[in-house]
Length: 387
Image 1 (spheres, rainbow, N blue to C red):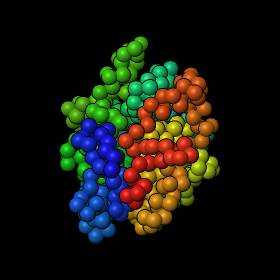
Image 2: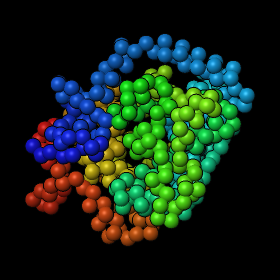
Image 3: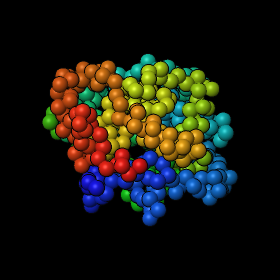
């Protein structure tokens, strides 16, 4: 069986798929036990019987009461886009915990009409809200640079999503910031240490894409440090000195992407109408405010053999809505797909031709994972035989 060098820099590994879900061990942060089951599936086994959700809710309520007592302005910042998860978090924080919340978002470059609707829909539920818009000239340059250097068009532009709401809380003396999902628990994303597998979100700068939160790595080739101010994470020491606490909602309240979507749909969420083939995903309620996500997930598929559909199918299998056999069938049909119109749109945004796009994109295809069959079609090596 072929070997590959995992993107996290680990030793060469045999490529295998989890025996319970469909996750590959090419995903940075995911580990497998002796039974061939991934760490995330093992975590999900504890969700129903191994976790005292009443105790965690009580802890959440205590944090909320602490925030109310400490607050001089708002009690909490909710980083939000208007999507399914932020609808759930914002309404729960306000209606169940009684927190006086302010929504803070970094509006994505070239936001979709659906994304704009969903943001306005959430704000109109009765929230004060703040939108930060990053310099689009800088955004486009960083997207282009990230595409050429990493085959990851959001690697730089993901940065501001987190420090902007944190700095807003620091500047306005708001004691609490409530993020949604702890992806280290729900997806197996890389963490620096085990302390990041709980409710404390102070280590969020260590997440996969952000890699420590030091945005100065992007301050070169004509982009100054002043131009990337919104991209720079405050240090843990700065956050603590400001008296701000960062937490993950999903640690305290049982988390489900599916349930969040059903809840948000009842509260006015609009979703995509495009086909699964065009979107490269199973459900149509995620990542609604930018069309670049489909392109980025296709690139991830080239590098790791997993796209967005992998994560969706894993969620559904772990929560009992889908069998593994059906999941594998859906995976082969839709994972890594991306309609030409989304690729063209991205090319127009960064000023390159589609021919140039494919030249660069193809250079990131992991040849330890992929090979051409007799018809010239790209297929996975070994993995398909190991399902």
